[in-house]
Structures are given as structure tokens and as C-alpha cells.
Image (cartoon, rainbow over all chains, first blue to last red; front, side, top):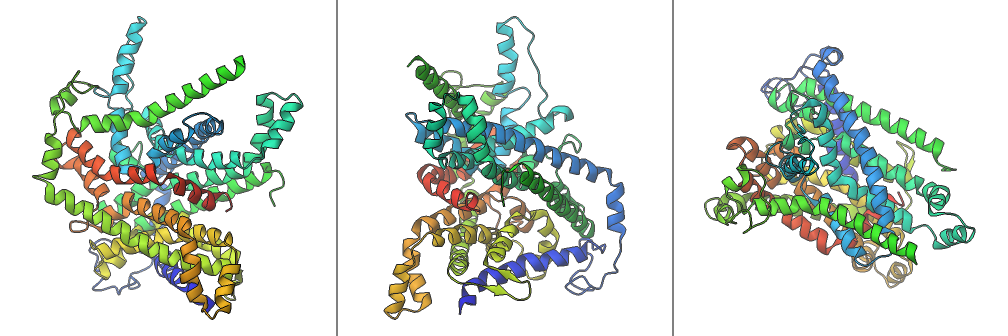
Length: 299
Length: 285
């Protein structure tokens, strides 16, 4: 009887997660192409195909893949840092009592609700080199002070464009960090602050000695979730830069998508996807072991 | 006293600064949708009636000439999002209830409740890229490409883990007494779940529904991959404007607003459920 409650979820996950996962592993060892007669000749599982290690050999020499790996790690690493730092500042502010706090919380939340595709367009409009308000501000504000106008090729110069993506991503997802950290802050008993204040500790000391250590567990969770999410990044990039210039902002998910949909090379796309999966597992493990080191007595 | 005044000033300055960063792009989106092409291309124009004359032609175009396209894709998004939300709520609350009230032991994997729950939530974090190829092949094989049902199915798969996680946490916080007295009165376990537990769980269910709906409404990768005409959702339609006719910012802005307004309204009015749902999902996990 009790199994009935679990059954739909388990069936769904086995059919739509576990099975595709293993099947995809099999596909990554074949060279199934689009229109390669998956339906007609090879049987539905693609088992009629000869197994080959060619896809995995190609991974090692595929320069574009290596760029996509570096880009993805760049987005994850810097995205998480930017979002954590700003998110923590916002959470600390929202933890203070002030008028309009609830309104501020709702406003801060809005980017998170917005369709990432829309956020990509917003980013493109904001960072347009000629017609955007940011470009306009960078042109005119320095002139007030007699300096030369600044021109930043946000979306066209490979040196800047990855940062632009990080900024756009962070605009959307910093609220997530804020919400979690704010909950963490509000769970800290007020007496702790007061006791420390009575003992003459400054705000900075209270933060360093009491608040921050208590925030470590929720910070680990928040950073982990955001990191895992950024590993999947595609929509914002697709719309704002299309992965360009060249492949300067192409992410792994995007490369998988293009290999499968644009080039029709299913076998290789599956192999790349497994590279992404292995990276995700690898970095999650490292992150969690590091977290365990710094967390005071976290089981 | 002096100190607290400065503190207040600093707080408001920071809040105002970040609100500006958050709200300005939305302001830009709204104003751009009322600009004529020239007002966009001759450089940034900021304030309606002052440095550009607002026009409603893009909105009219969207809801007259393009009316059928706009509404069809809006409907597609709505169907995919509500369908998967409904399924995720049903499946998620059942599994969440099970994990909260019974003890399981899966012999094959030697998992108990905690491990099962962890396995379920971990599915949520698998990179979607892994499923690109198998779902393309599966969906082609079963004729699910470009169908509402196909989208609902895959979104449900992504929504269920989070739904289970939130609902399990929610049920853990509900007292057992009510169910037990209903059981004493002769209700079956399932009846007790339906009649007693679920009505008490509205906040949790609402949180799950909001998350599922927003995720499905905003999802892009699978919608792009698995639809090509009939079932195309708004994000795919919007992203497609990129290449079809060059970039018509004014039109794209209006279209984007059509996709953004519903979820922003959800955010504005149901914020407390979102916050509480995230807490359940993350703090206790």
C-alpha cells in the first residue's frame, strides 16, 4: 500500500531519467547521425550500431570543446562569486528593520521570475555598444569631468564578453542567493547579537565572529545550487551573444545542443554531455569536501 | 542617535541603488515597446513625451496582425506550464507524503527514506544537456515532437523532484493527530491524505505550483529542441525574433513583456509562497 504513494514519481524518474541516462551513455559510443535511420535499420535503442570509441578520442583534440569547458567554468566560478558577494550584502541590508522592507524584497525578487530568454535580450539592449543607456552614460559622464569618453565593447570583444554574460546572469540570479542568505540570517537568534554588543563588539566583529560562521551551512547550499544551475547555462547566452564572438561565450550545454541539432551528430553530442556530467560531479565533490573542511562540525 | 541616522541613510541608499539596477531594465523594456524604430536607432531615449513620442503601433501589431500567432504561443506556454504543474503537484505531493509518513527500505539499493529523497532531488540537478540526445530520439520514435503532451512530460520530470522535496518537508511539519483521528473514524490512508492532509497543505501546494509553473513557463532548451511549429512556446518565439527579421527591438520588447508579465505578477502577489518554498527546499535540505 505505502509503495503506491511513491510509485508515480519513481516510475517517472526511472523512465525519463535513469533509462535515458544509460541509453545516452550507449549512444555516446556509437556514431548515430541525424537521419541515420535510427528508426528503420538500427532498432529503437540504436543497438544495431557498431560501438566505437571515436567520440571519446575526439573529445581530447576538439579545441572548440575545450573552449566551451573553460567558458562554462568561468561562468560558474565568477558567477557564483559575484552573486554570493552581492547577495550577501543585499541579505544583510534586508535583515535590518526599515520601512518599505517588504516592498524592497519583492522588487529584488523580480529578475528571478523573468524568462531567461527575456533577460538575454535585456542584457543585449543594456550593453549595446552604441544605443544603450550604459554606452550613453559611459560616453557622456566622463565628459562632465573633462575626461575622454569610455567605450567598452561589452558584447563584441572576447576579453569582455564573458564578463558581460556573468553580469547578466548575476542580475537575474543574485536574488536567489539573497533569499536563502536572508533566511539564514533570520534564523540567527537575536540574543546572540545583543549579548555580543553588550560585550562591546563592533558590527564588523559581530559579523565575523557570529553571523558569518552561522551562515556557512546555508551559504554552502546556496552556492552549490547556483553553481549547479550555472553549469546548465544556455538561454541567456543564446540570445545575448549566440555564443560569440567566435565561440568566446559558448557553453557546454550550447555546444551539445549545436552538435546534436545543428550538426546532427548525436553520438558525439552524447559524449560531450557526459563530459559535462562528469565535470558537474567532479566539482560538486570537490566543493563539498572543501565545504566540510571549513564548516565547523557539520556532521 | 547620529550613528543610527547614518545607518538608515546607508540602508536606503543601497536599497535605492539596487532597486534602480533591478527596475531600470524593466523600465527600458516597457518604454522600448512604445518607441518608433527611429527613437531606438538614433541613440538612447529615456522619457516618453520628452525625448520621444510614444506609440502603440507595436502593441497593436502584436494583437491585430499577429494576433493569432501571439495568442497561439501564449496558449502553448500556458498549456505546457499548467499541465506539468498539475502533474508535478499530484505526483510530488503523493511521494512527499509517502516519504514523510512511511518507512521505506529498497532492498535492491539498500536505501531508506533519506537516501530515496536525496536520490529524487538529485535528479533535479542533472545537466539537461545529458538528455538532449536520448529525448530527441525517444520523442521522434514515439511521435511526441511538437506536441503539448511531450513538453508536459519532460517538464514534469524536471518539476517532480523539487515538488517531492518541498512537500515532504511540508508534511513533516504537519501534526499527525488529525489524520490519526480520521483513521480511527474509519477513513483509509488515502482518504485521510485527500480529505485531511491536502487541504491543510495549501501553502506548500501553492509554492510547488508556483515553482513548477514558472520553471515550465520560462524553459527554453527543451522547448526549442522538441517543438518546431504547433507547440512552440513564448521563449522560443521570442528567441526566434533574433534571426527572422533582424532585430526589431520595439517589437521584441512588446513580445517579451507578454511573456514576462504573467510571471512577474505571480512574483508580486505570491512572493511569500516563493520565499517559504525556497526555505523549505534549501534550508532544511
